[in-house]
Image (cartoon, rainbow, N blue to C red):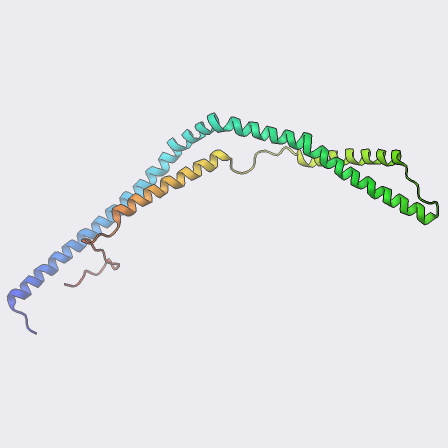
Length: 192
């Protein structure tokens, strides 16, 4: 199929327009990438300088008193309720174990079955006090606060939400429309 000179001239003109459009799209994509990088830097700066201190101040003002109060109450319950109860239970179990061992030893020696409640009550008190002291010592090791606190978690959540918002806005700006087309290969212009 042979093309007329007029048709060839029109096709060359169309090819030139397509190449110009292709070059301008490449420049536009490069500028959009620069804008996205700068937006990321600005978001990081905003998070460090404005958002972080605001969240920390809000946490210190509103949430920290309640968190501190609940931590103190938890320590109180643990120290004054759980540890003594656990110590009593452990002490009672150990005194029952001792009673069983003593009775078995007495029966093995042929002395018969004898139950001295006072003796075992003293042992139960001794074992429960000892178990309570051991549990208290293990549970009350005052190590500094390890890990991230509630304020840090809130700041991370807000930072992730802000980053997601920026990414969504960039995606909406740079997504492909029906009229625009950007090829995967930036070095080769589309054929006309």
